[in-house]
Image (tube, rainbow, N blue to C red; front, top):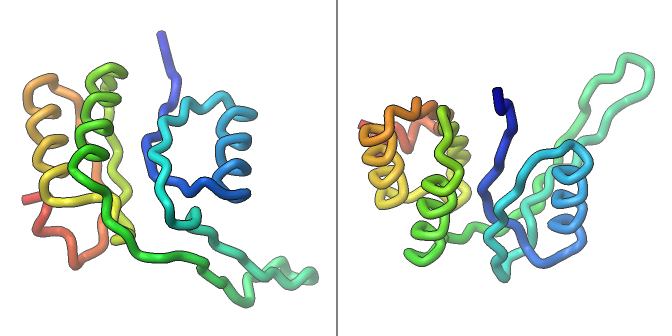
Length: 128
């Protein structure tokens, strides 16, 4: 039984994008990355040592939206992978769009792939 994991997402052509690709490779996670001009979204956590408690998180990000060609690439990759499960993590960073969600819903309905969603409340309407 193939229990592989694949990720599809957007990263920048920068050091953090390269670091992310390396982490995926080290953990045998297949990554189909859409490269864009924006920097890779990065979260930096500041942890105190005694109780290992997070004190602060700094987010380095710029909002962007994927283009129609990127949405088509995502759908093509999903079709090629033929997954049993599709997990969409929508953190309102510009990756998910109404068009992409509609395509994923149609693919799920056609193939029986289970579509699982983790979304921000402001985007729940995209998944109706």
